[in-house]
Length: 49
Length: 457
View (tube, rainbow over the protein chains, first blue to last red):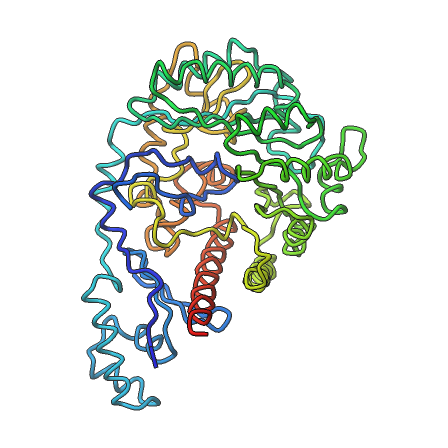
């Protein structure tokens, strides 16, 4: 029986190299105006995909 | 750092600093809980209720994850983010307060029923155009620029909205920019012409509705004290239908008066909306509708219930998207974005009808936070710098929190509201945010299981 199922093993550390371009959406412009939802935005930098 | 929890029959292990997520059996779950600070022999002894050979084998599997950098990954971001925050920032998003006036009288309105505790006013086209000029001039090489038409109620100044969009489009080619316009509306003045224009020009529309009729009408009455649900619902349904593939959200607020908010989310889904956002009201405890600390356990159950129902509907082919359970485990934001916060005061600013600039829409009306205006630009660089250096490592409450890569240190305005400074955190908001992240990951685990089952059959 499989003991460990890994849903994602992408390490965030890799995004330090080409991250920070800032082309992604500002969280409060999406569908919230009273909480902070940075984590559910999508990356729009093709070099990080 | 590892965050492990059990939810809906799943043992979930989130490796905080790598962002990896593992779904594990009971044995591995228990090994991971003991792994740090103990030798293999000690772990084997501690887990004596299991078969020793099995524990040994599973222990080696866990060690494999550690060696791969997907478990107990170290936090290597502190210096990186401090350097990153010191960089020159550019402005990329504006929230235009196109109308400080409203045709509803919502009880929980942080904008004081549209006026932001000041005078009623509509933004002139001149101020709106200057705002876009300011944005273009301060956006550096950033191509995608966002402008939200906000209020009050922006449809009370619709002509200026249309002409501002037109003006923005006229700037795009010349400056190599792409405007993404969005509109947040209560729907009262929606008509065919507005929907048609919005479907052509607005990348996203946010439609304010709280859920069940009685819940909505109590908190969102018209100026003459009647409910607004029956006026706007048919318009929103038509608007959502006409959006086609374009983005929209029905967005609501839940309060102490409807702690059973999962019913409101499902009510909207049953009405045919498939893009839904409902978030807790943020208000000081003296308001009767404020969320209280003792409400948290019940609210957590609501999120669990909602998550399970969403999985069920997903499997039945009638799923919907709940904004606050959205999580992109493989293509989410980069570390820089995750740790540097929402961008308020640096990348994101709000503009009042008079052209004054504030760090975000929630600071409008707090005179001390006025950072300049669209005519003369930034006048108080010290405020911008304060926001610039605001990141999760500058906040004591966030440093060791598993959610720090998802909420980015939370909302600065909420922190200010409850603690008088932007480097704290709104505690009730944190508890609920953590629960939403747990549910969001559990849904991913359940759907991954379901997909695997389908493939096997």
